[in-house]
Amino acid sequence: MAQITNSESHNFPAAQRATHARGRAIAWIGIAAFCALAAPARAALPADGPPAQIEVTDELGRTIEVPQPVRRIVSLAPNLTETVYALDAGDRLVGDTNVDDFPAAAKTLPHVGAVLAPSLEQIVALHPDLVLATNDLNRRVTVEALARLGLAVYVTDPLSIEDVLNSTARIARLIGAGERGDSAVAGMRARLDALAQRLASVPPRRVLFVVWTQPLISVGKHTFLNDALVHAGAQSVVEIADGWPQVSFEYVLKLQPEYLVFAGSLGEANAPPVEELSKLPGWRDLDAVRNGKIAIVSDAIDRPSPRMVDAIEELARLLHPEAFPASATGSARLISPENLTEDCVACAR
Image (cartoon, rainbow, N blue to C red; front, side, top):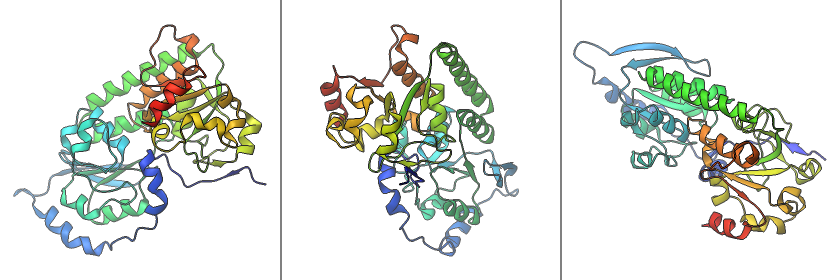
């Protein structure tokens, strides 16, 4: 019997993951229907001709032309919205998706719909100079449709923490915030280097990162989330190379991870109450559940943006307290037998 299957589940926040299957069934409105809308939206050019443009290659190898300067940005993923705000360019965001929730200002922007099926009509109506998308969440049909409508769509594809840093720097240069981007990336890199020095002498913890519980989905080796675990002093017990594999409890039981790791959004919205894990078939047979070694870390860990470094540091403190004497863990917490009931009640709220 196969122990592992490939899953189409992406690294969505909980609300997105729950609509993933439904999103694939949504009927797409024809591109031609929007062409009439697109023409007037892009016809209002300065009297002296079209704005200057630069030609760039995005992270999928697509060549795009981006008007300069970039004054109006639409983001199609929460991590990209966070990145723009981190670059002090939030005032140029004119639209995002209906699940973008950080920082708080992101909730007040005009929403263009779901990550999997944003409204092309609403995006065009916002007259963006640049649309930001990510290969991990957004569908290629969306990117192609927007490109055919004449919009510049830059697609990111971060598969490692280094890729996250590079994406941040590229977006910064693209929107004319290169100096701020260089500063942000240098700061993140310095923090990651300092963390690596702290963890250099401690063995990695064997963990199972739970992306989804029913079915049980974890992270593949060639994902930014797996690389985040490595930076936090952890080693995933799942050996599958790519994507977000669905694994069986039989497979996990053989490996017996030392810790289970949940993102905060999962612990609050998707996972069964943590105190119930010890009562559920499969889960109750895991040593990590019996020993109360369940780490809940900020949901920033599953968003490839500058804030991800915060979550990596939090997880490292939970897994290796000996390397961080008297150090706070931020919003992260470890569900131990002593605080199980109290913390799980908080998770369920």
